[in-house]
Image 1 (cartoon, rainbow, N blue to C red):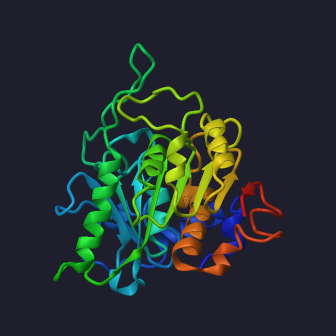
Image 2 (image 1 turned 180 degrees about the vertical axis):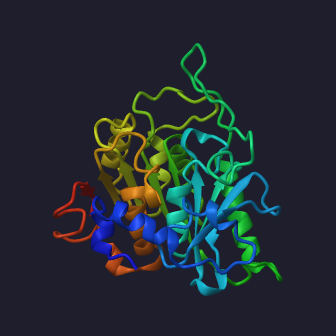
Amino acid sequence: MIDRAKKANPFTWLAATALLAMAAMPLAAADAPAADTLAETRGSGPFPAVMESDPGLPNHVIYRPASIAGAPKLGVLVWGNGGCTDDGASARRHLGEIASHGYLVIAGGNIFSGPQAPPGAQAAFRGAGPDGILPSPSTTTEDMRAAIDWAIAENARKGSRYEGRIDTQAIAAAGHSCGGLQAIQLAADPRVKTVLVHNSGVYNDGKMHIRDLVLSKDQLASYHQPVIYILGGPKDIAYANGSDDFSRIKHVPAAMASLDVGHGGTFGEPFGGAAAAVAVDWLDWRLRGDEAAGRTFNGVNCRLCVGSEWKLERNW
């Protein structure tokens, strides 16, 4: 397993380990995709992950350990895609990495990119109109809520591959950019135990920038769980919004981790890059009570505090 200190400061180990991890740990599931499609989604964790669709949950993309029986009870992460697009494979490296650490990850949409995309597959175009406002999201917060409903139902359904295999008390909401706004909207759901907001934040000017996606800073009061903002530094177009959100959150534990990579984060890097490593530690700490993972964020000498290119702020 990758050393947590390397995960928290993951700027030299990623390239060196990428090819090794892609070749290691053969998949056990008979229904797993062909091996040549797995390099981007299997992750570096102890439970190599697959990406798939499930007829029981249409218009969603699922990331899970290939061998569910070999994994611990699965925590759940529901994901809002960048741009609120309907390409549930757009963050496949990041989401596969999380799944490889024993999580069931569900994104809205379908597989429209990457080696598993059907020929000619293409996500809906989402350019801004003449008024500068982006069109209505192709996926919604309700898609994320439906994913939670489905996961809980599958855990209880006799004969389901997930029967008794999901930890229904370990559910997280997360998303990138527009999808991060959807995660903020979903935070009010009492089933959501932590929230991860990537390269996003409620608009500081209070205006509508995405049609039919309206929320104000008042929405931050709906947080009832720990939250982390994972931002891309001052050149991230969402940095001002996200950092302002963080400054307003006093009533629940909140952190802001920023790495100077811009709005696109590290989603395109092997295993989702540095941001995915930080996300896994946050999930392990907040959903599983893993204090070793918590040391990435906790204490004077936390892993993101010392010898790291990350800048970390906390309200605790």
